[in-house]
Length: 355
Picture 1 (tube, rainbow, N blue to C red):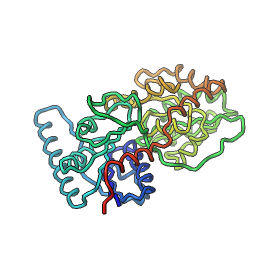
Picture 2: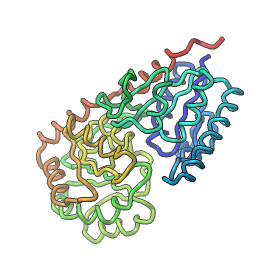
Picture 3: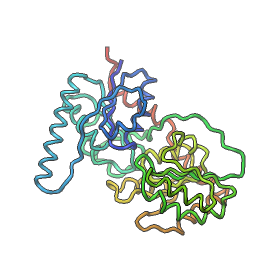
Picture 4: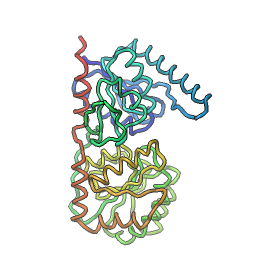
């Protein structure tokens, strides 16, 4: 049985694709272990995948002393990972990007254990960039990924999304709008965005169903805004069935994290993206730009927020059925529905079966 170690931590954007890939690998009969950090463990919930929590730190600071300290901790993390891998000896190790994945992947390369890298975003991440030359295989989510190191051959498989139950789209005149900010939440998606959207919601409140995910600290205020305006909305800190809701959503207003983008394309949801400003390497903006260019999605800048532009995009989608269908079809054309199984096949092709 092939022993596969998956390495993903930090945010849901790294962990969720790893869990989706794990499901495909299980079906292929692989023995699995997930290496994550304390932040990544939050996203495991009741998952039954064997896992190990590692210590991980992101190199920060620009002073000589900060860089020296970061170098020491990275070296220590690599050495610790090497000792762990020597004890457990996986056949292949799969890194899903982010600094928590760097040390185990580098340790595996030093031990001549095959390493497969997966990049979720439309720009090649810094950790993956430092590991790419020594990787046995590199997998991408976007065909036109920026920053791929020169000389690196990559396979476009898409970003794995876990299967969800089918949901029949209601045959009624209602339009369904879902507002959510991904696994990390966002203050901007609370009262500020609600107030900006309210004029449009008031216009269409008789045939509009709104699902709005907010941070715990914004829950009461956002609920009151809808209640006082007489607009019916379901507001929650977390929708456990969010994928099922997205399957019947007409318009989504969302961040542009890699997992969010993968789900919205897979389900063919017309989307207006408000990327996380100032994110590392502007990953979310680049993800959104790829969807704007190729799938007819829309993007609004949070720093230079244009309320009329946002309302204009959403109003056109809600009021013009043919336009809505065009955007939905274009989003779905960008999807990679078999990403999990394709990545699983790529991983298993790098090693022979263990006796």
